[in-house]
Image: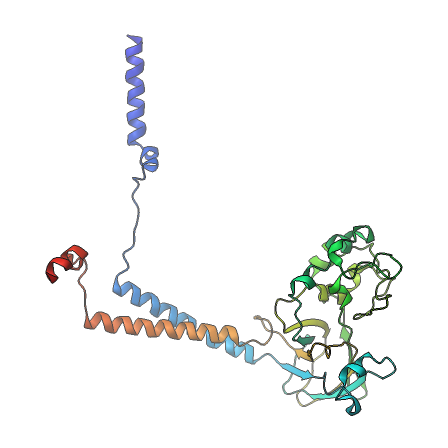
Length: 342
């Protein structure tokens, strides 16, 4: 009697479970909303996308146009006329002065902060061997973590480890810039130009440069051996490699306004050798907006996408008007179309 009642109660429990939400979920028998993409819904969707994207693209273009920017290429202008035919001998000869003065005119009022960048072109920092030629552990913890990945710049001529090692650090950019307006010097803030996360977590506070650029084959800039790597911000900026062969890296920040039609003198020390691989060098002064620097691509992308969406909505509307299709028309089923054709 007890067994019968137990089995009966167990069966009732199983039936209740099967009829409950859990059973319907495991059997995929829950109610669901499955939208039907009607012609009207499709046309409205494209139209709404176009109405939103086109004005936003125009707004992005307007914002980009309000960003002040000065670009001046100097790798050719800073070579003396006597060496224009052999630029490599000029850049490799340490007895020749590399100082060069250029003047630029401010086209529009530029409000501080004004970001100073150096721009390199035809420099492939994304090359596989170049990107791998570094030791992140050494940058963080010191010379004992010098790795084979730093090859071919890992040991100096005397067999001592190079800190920082690798081709990226070895090719450090070393052109410098000074700005004057008349007889007044324009200060450039060189602090906090790198990512805070890089300074605090990727470069050691107790790791100092050693045996760097002391070999027979000299690359780019030198480092102060008394300053830890976490404070060598030029190096930190350079070590964050670029994905494209044309890139900009932050040099400093001018914290005063530049007025329209002012003439700015730039004293350039043209030390970096881009002539061997046919590279180009430019200096860039730029303000910034909430979208960043001057870049029209985002605005053009939104305008093109929105315009195409509006065009597609109009096209679909005309097709729907000319060839209407009633919803749920059984004649449009594949097997009915075969019967009608026969």
